[in-house]
Amino acid sequence: MNWSAKPSSVQQARPALIGPGRLVLVVGPSGAGKDTLIDGARATCRDDPSFVFPRRLVTRPSSEFEDHDTMSEASFDQAVTERQFAFWWSAHRLRYGIPASIDDDIRTDRTVVCNVSRTIVAAVRERYARVAVVMITAPSEVLAARLAARDRAGDGEIAGRMARSTTIDQNFHADFVISNVCRRENGVRRLLNVICEQDFHISS
Image (cartoon, rainbow, N blue to C red):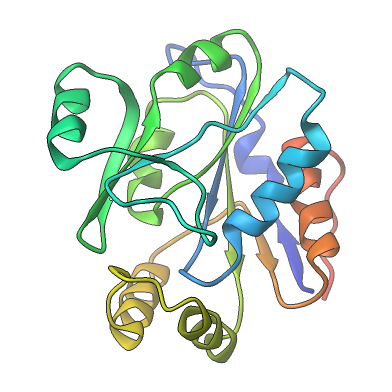
């Protein structure tokens, strides 16, 4: 499992932004295993209130492959109008939102960890004082096999999703990268390193 880190860009807080807590954004292509690693980190941190793993709200029923709270399109529209989300985005004909309660968590110096789209990272960085972006990835053949295995309705055609992901990656910068191709425990440990602000090492 490859592991790369560029921690210097996420260590200094900027004034007038939401802080002093940290926001850890977990991103990556469909099939990379983001939720799997987040679930493992959540289980490890479950007894420590300083770490928060908010549930996403999505305009799709939850499944064994993605655990979230479900909203109708109309309810999502209302939630946007009422500013119930800290931020939200659209992808694959669906909409996703992170609850506004994370702002209070971050203001009380907690660390918030959430799975988000790479397309909103730049905007989120402009709102929060301390943001760490973790890219979870895997070789294209591994991603394709995982997507085919889950065969989730509404995901869209696999080749199209992978092409879209490649286009996004061309100009995307992450602070940390985890290649999730080996044991689950290895990926969880590396994600926990970021979440807990432990020492980072570049290895191959």
